Amino acid sequence: MKFRTEVEIPFSETKIDLNSKIFSIGSCFATEIAGLLNDGQIQNFNNPFGTLFNPFSINKALKSCHNSEYFTENNLIKFNEYFISLDHHSSFNTRFSHQTLDFINHKIQQSNEFLKETNFVLITYGTSFIYEFLPKKKLVANCHKIPGKYFEKRYLSHLELCDSISESISLIKDICPENVQILFTVSPVRHTKDGIVENQISKSKLINALHEVISTEENCTYLPIYEIMMDDLRDYRFYKEDLIHPNSQAIQYIWEKFGNAYFSEETKTFITENLKIKKALEHKTDDLKNPKYLEFQQKLKEKIASQQGKVKHKIFN
Image (cartoon, rainbow, N blue to C red; front, top):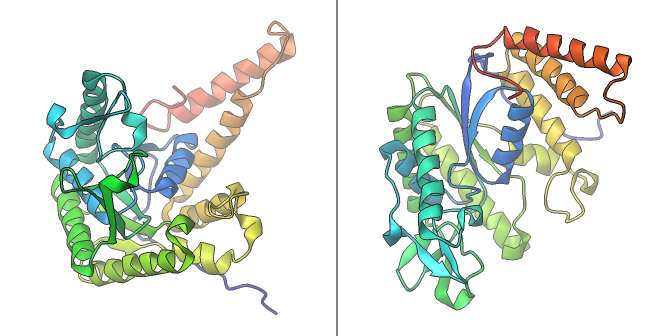
């Protein structure tokens, strides 16, 4: 007797190995996966523009990274004593324009270099909604808590969604190595502030556009993360207290399904051992000269050295 509908991530012939590089961009779910990759010491680069949600803004960010298109003061506005880019997350805001620009342009440079060696790109879309900043008649990624009277909110049209997705694929295939794998997901985080019905419309538009575009593209895959959360984990015990975001148990479940589909056996073993090391590194003691603690530390160093010998990049920096 079955009590739930289990959703599987399609098995991939192309595996993430120990020296693969993974670039991720999009909503906070992309950041969750990037965090787990970091813990497992797999090379990755996440969200050079900060958390983004809609395909238009994500494509705009990818275009800047692809072209090494640096920002200038003309791209910033000043609000509440902070210099802000409406194309970026608020984590880039500073009180000085040169600091904001340095932060932004350094990330663009880093992402451009990383993309040239990237084997897997993970794009997570969160919403079909977008805001237009009326004073500049510009579609933006983030409103930065600027009063709503300066914005107009609307759905991206089906054509706008498809064009953004298609151009993102072209940009990635142009800058990344041949046969780069592009993995698309729709974030399981529900944007309830838009309204329950409106959120469903928004997600449906994303899924519809995604499937239409990638059906004619090579090396592009849809990962059913949204479906796993909505159907497989159909229970509020898998959400945080806000009843919107997946909790750690749900993220771990999705991570394991992703790993089973995309990690080589060697990668699984490597990550599992690194997670044990990470947990051990968090161990603290009040007696730093205790012989048992010193022995524990020595064994830990030996384990890290053994793991380091398996890869070319630095781990546990």
